[in-house]
Image: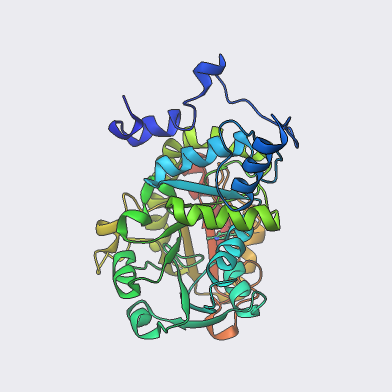
Length: 389
Ligand SMILES: *Cc1c(COP(=O)(O)O)cnc(C)c1O
């Protein structure tokens, strides 16, 4: 039975493990070799050539060198691709390394340097685009202005949904139809493949900071992009040249993390949905940002998501002073950046993750971002209650 016939949770447990039985092992092996024995110069050289240009190792030529290919990383990539319904996936040393390689692959030698982006984006992504470090020029626009913002030299459309930090939703199919032939990349970090598959909605790439939900335990920095094989060839080509590799130990942890990803997402989401409603009734809270809490007026949650996720943000009546008090008074929540782990985190984006964003696009100093973990929801609510009082 092919994995395509099976339910998502089953694929999460079994994908990327197809070769293990033949190797006589049950758990994922970790291959730490940096170099590999060559069969002979001719075949080793041909395999090198294939991988250095973004292809796969030749069956009789070997993997040559770990900057070009690593089987532990490749297994994680094929597992993630299966969960995204993609032909391929390419993993990187971080989410930002993935974004950088993705921009280079689409601009570097293509003669196209223009990027269209819908804010808000993760602060680091915004910073990379604003900095022009990669020689790109970015037009920021609203979801409905994407089509009008595209030029002859537009290389990419960059969107994020739900967006970091205010959980804004973008209609992916709407953007993809406006973009036409221009590839759309969706930062799918908040939704994960459990809740949203951007490729099925017309996007060319689904990008993850795997540091967050995919790793899920706050101990791995990683990025991964799901896409078609032709795009994967370009991304692997950039990765082979620039070297922003995922370490095999990290790939092992991520692949193991995928097995519990559906379970974690559903449990964390259930608590987040309850906490969002509870916060909405709290007198210190001006607004709760959580997908669908406003009744999903544009029908985006219903159309493109299988759930509303475990991230939320709150705008506080008391502004920065109230945010400062909340983040310092919580006991169970850790006051820290990052998100998506089994333990709950809280932070002020304007001061930290979104600090580099231009003032007019930066979230307000009253907006606190909260990542809900796997603790008892009653304990989390009690902690927020004491910290908000
Ligand atoms: C954290 C994050 C990134 C960057 O990923 P790193 O793994 O930290 O490099 C990108 N997008 C989103 C939505 C994020 O939350």
